Length: 284
Ligand SMILES: NC(=O)c1ccc[n+]([C@@H]2O[C@H](COP(=O)([O-])OP(=O)(O)OC[C@H]3O[C@@H](n4cnc5c(N)ncnc54)[C@H](OP(=O)(O)O)[C@@H]3O)[C@@H](O)[C@H]2O)c1
Image (cartoon, rainbow, N blue to C red; front, side):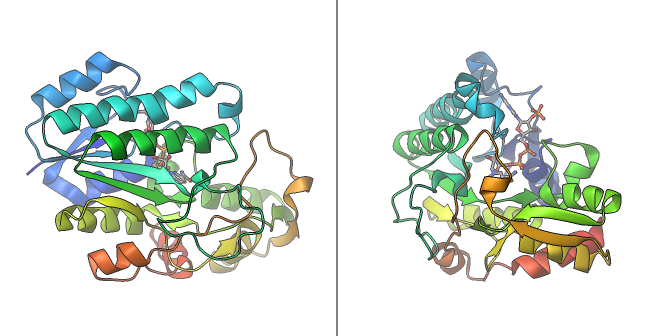
């Protein structure tokens, strides 16, 4: 049975289509625009498969602070319509969300489970949380999958806004030393591992809310140092507090996700972030 992939030209969408092979029905923004109700309805009306995966999103975390209406249109109202259309047709809907639904708990030090109360600190996080709630309340056969810091090979072809690994490799070739924030704790995740987990999850038909990231936790500074080490580069990384790297949007100080529920459901552990990074660097 075919599975439709919205955001098919993005990092995760590209990888999902690759892993699905002939079963994928790729929908790029040109095919289905989440902000255009007619295009969403038309696509769903002619769809004969069983499951839709929404990997499309408005991801510009800082710019979202200045154009919340655009972020909400793509991340909340689009998924709301998609959820309604899927519910009306009894389709399963996978909706991808983010660790940025957390952040309000400033002194948090242990990984968030699906039972923890979210508390976003940015417009992007708020818009994604609104999207989650629409999908969960409207479409009974839903998987809402929260993930973090995605990197995938499609970024090399210009997909989405790029990714942290590629940015570090580029900057590392230009400079001897980089200053990178060391007070945001999370788990950057390879789209290869995320896509495989999502496709396994779909098979189970155990609908609900899931956390899906590579296992372990790190900071962006430590992650950058590992990138340079694994890539055989000598660029030095100096850790700095977020206060020395001001951005328009606030980021969570701690947004590590506990994936026990996912791992029990699909019957295997998520690969570590170190293994995932090594695999990515060797395949690019
Ligand atoms: N990237 C991360 O670090 C990260 C972290 C946590 C969670 N996530 C979530 O993971 C999912 C996948 O992220 P990703 O990194 O694969 O994103 P990505 O590479 O930026 O791809 C997102 C795709 O969505 C498309 N899109 C944007 N607006 C659209 C609209 N109105 N209608 C239809 N498509 C639209 C984009 O098309 P255009 O290129 O034409 O704009 C792009 O192809 C998203 O839900 C995201 O929120 C990502």
